[in-house]
Image (cartoon, rainbow, N blue to C red; front, side, top):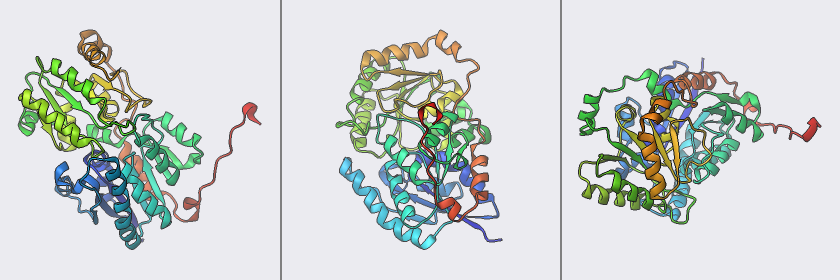
Amino acid sequence: MTKRRIAVVTTSRADYSHLYWPLRLLSENANVDLRLIAMGSHLSPEFGMTVREIEKDGFTPATRIESLLSSDSDVGMAKSIGTAVLSLADALGAMRPDLLLLIADRYEMLAPAAVALSLRIPMAHIEGGEISEGAIDDAVRNALTKMAHIHFTSTETARDRVIAMGEEPWRVHRAGAPSLDHLRRSRLFERREVEARCGLDLSRPPLLVACHPVTLEQDTTAEAGALFEALEELARETPVVFCFPNADAGSRALIGQTRDFLARHPDGRLFVNLDAVTYWSLLRCVEVMIGNSSSGIMETASFALPTVNVGIRQRGRERARNVLDAEANPASILARVAEARSPRFRASLAGMNNPYGDGHAAERIVEVLTSVPLGPALLIKRAMPIPREGGS
């Protein structure tokens, strides 16, 4: 039996944490020839050279694509896409996988999708059908959906949305978010282990901040000022720890603001990179998560962790009842943090479920990838009829 060659693209620590268990199951399947493509911030020392984490986990990238410009502008983002296209054309042209697996909504994912489309390589896409109105991610996600031939959505609503975009229902599978598989399959660390790995004293649960540039704003860090103003007040009593922002226009400015803040509040920390299990374990130990990261919506619900979502970046995304939305002004942020800390709100989260899945996404994804028939029936998509009022 000829092995099915499946290529998987990962561009950052964030998507790799989601892809870990699908990659693990694909690598263990005797009928799969797995080809991992590492690109983007994985190869950037500035963002932690996270390709080393991939190798530490036992995966050897088949191809490394140097594509991320050392830039902090939207022009740099656009040029990074072009740089990636040139290298991926050679890499995928030589590799010719049977399927290419892409995930989520990072702008650099447009490069492998465009190349695969030109080379007639069928694509599968994870986490389509979601909404994040305040970032270019929303348009990227929808573009990838229309380019892809197989879809794995996190929620039933997302599946309905992908079908409403004209995709044939047989192509669209509700798998759940694969990042949640860590909760079921991985051994999370106890508090003392997290303290040792992170260099933190967690006897006072800190606030965890994950703030990324808002890429649809002219000033992509405009909302961050309000957040840091609120954090100045919060840090008087509670340690604040930060995760590094995404490699988007404005990320260096955010990093600079964070380092300046920590110079005034030395009991805090900035983590350039945390492996997935350490990050998940830290989520169990913090008091509240604050910021505009999708992780604050998709993953914190699994721990009933109160989360304050700031500003417009995640506007429109489905969320569980642990998420409180704040406007990008200090008063709103502080009011929502106070609510998140209240015993009444915490008690209201008892028994809640995470709408993004049950920890079985990887096996559902791998089952489809290894069994879906290849050939013209997969590659040639048919548009669904446009529904008319009254059923006509």
